[in-house]
Image 1 (cartoon, rainbow, N blue to C red):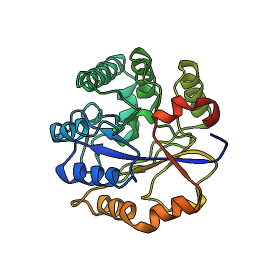
Image 2 (cartoon, rainbow, N blue to C red; image 1 turned 60 degrees about the vertical axis):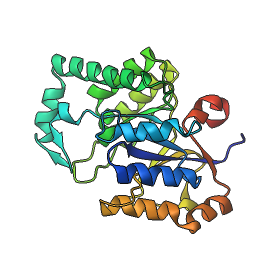
Image 3 (cartoon, one colour; image 1 turned 90 degrees about the vertical axis):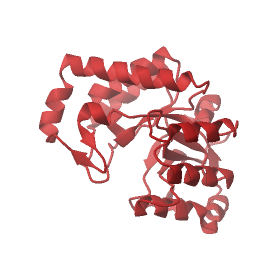
Image 4 (cartoon, rainbow, N blue to C red; image 1 turned 180 degrees about the horizontal axis):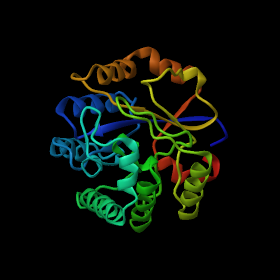
Length: 255
């Protein structure tokens, strides 16, 4: 691959509901979704697993859910003020519990006979250094070589953003490089203004949450992906669609 614009269209929350499962797989069948993130503890994970196993070329990563440990509830309720949350997260027993839970979810995924294309976290909680570090340790343990990563921090729907300083971002990136873990250069969230024509050079991840029904913002993602104009623009702009697994196989060209 020569230097250009590459786009991973990654669908989050697989396993959270039948409508989300259907929306993701319809988008995949249309060639729009190129990767996905599975909630291995999701309430409809068994339905999602059946769909995955019927589609051998379907790429799927692990969407680690640590909300219960953080006291977070749907649809965006933080039980603790952020300073209190950060204080709790610095306690040794919390970090131990995080590492154990991440290991448990990765093990459950692997026991299904799946090969993870990447790892990310529900609500981007690996933006917190206290969660990022044990996550990288578990990834290294199981030789998982790709992750969602944003140097600019993470915006959250209905929650306080997860800010990352330049110093922390550099430290995180150095830790990933040391372990041989790859990541896209840019993270794009369609909840915020974006245009395919403005996708920068390098590798970008477009994080989407398509669903056939339910939350309006999820339905908007599905409608955006299904609009013929979306794929025609991708083609006209010369954007190459890839999955997280292509980061590892094409590392010299994509880094």
